[in-house]
Image (cartoon, rainbow over all chains, first blue to last red; front, side, top):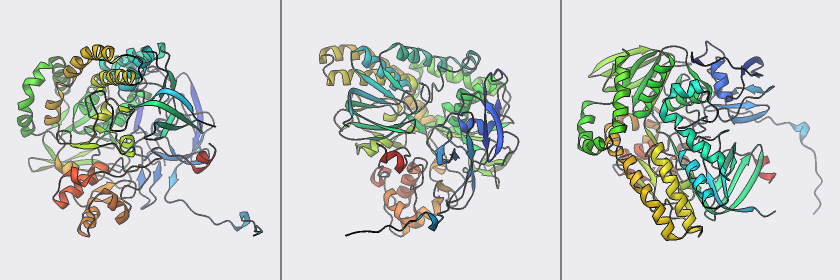
Length: 117
Length: 458
């Protein structure tokens, strides 16, 4: 979910000379290079990074220093990445984490193994 | 493959870690400095080597000071490894870390933990809502990305970092809607007995007074003695409500920044089963060290705010002292040399710490903001409220570790970092015993998240 960004560059900041392209929940974003994924998402107007596994309440970064684990997102298929500790990179696919993880039983992937004693 | 052996592994490249690593390298030791961030500086000097000059200027001279430490580190022989997430330190001084998806292990003759501080939890109603952040988090956004709230922000709580952020926001042209201060007149009364010592730390005190004066002079709405803080909102923060002298107030805002001091980050020292004490002035657990920073775990040292809050300048001196302690321990210098070099540092440390009793007394977090009402969320990860925690106590739950089995409290991804102190104090109050008696969570590795796949790849 995106709204008006809660954070923006302060007036004295020069415009970023280098940007990277990434996506959040399949929406393309262009963000300054060299900043954390959490900072980039906040300035892009993302204020819901995940929903909790217990009550599915919305959460966003609280500490920005790797302590609170509120900024967990899925980055390039790896869930539970601390987005405040990961630097943005070109082509990143980022997804919010919604609620508890599904444990999908996939019988197709289970192969019968013959056990010899 | 047997792990590489090095003289010293330092964990954390903040003020203490940078100063210690540089000093030890200068004494001929082989030092590896492991840091979770992408560049040195820790949180106080976050991004110091990368911040553009205009940003450094806006953040003020105390921030810019960190550049000297970073430059000395860069000029030294220290092997600095950024993006290194240390997930285990053993009592045998084996250090395991994850870097760019690969696992590494080092055997160290000595380990220095310089893992610093974290902000004290500020459990109030609505503190889990998006739009509510710690003041430290907002400051990190400013230091590392030049970002600030895009609409009028409310700062709430107390403590030097909160006011410093306000001052930095003013310099950056950010609109502050209100400063909701929890400091009460009786806090000044309590701090008064430390005033003489504080006056001897005049440069620090003067800086603080100037900072407060510029905040007052900027015409920001300033509420003192605020109580019953709560954030309103469904999907995100919409307003901060509180009361002053019994009168209810409400300020509309999408951004609330909370702060009530910092506390040592004790994940590693706890996991090492080092001895900790409850600090009655700073109201937190503190690992016990000798005068060189050595824990009761031989060869494992601690420096900086992780050993008790003293601030960045004190941390750098403590880092240098621990460096001397380790150099003496590893026979890189004689004990006479060690003591000689330490003497001026100890004087300097005493000067740096002189202001602390005054600050600790003046900005002691309020009990109602540490031991919250029943409806307030204590464990953010597993969503356990203070009321639920109290019901566990009524059923016989005696401490934080039992609270885990009663209701998963402290068992989420943050491993109790965000609720640990609150849980200790809520249980202590409910049982009518001291926090020291209740104790803390039993912390176990992995201290940082690691996948089974990564673990198996070693």
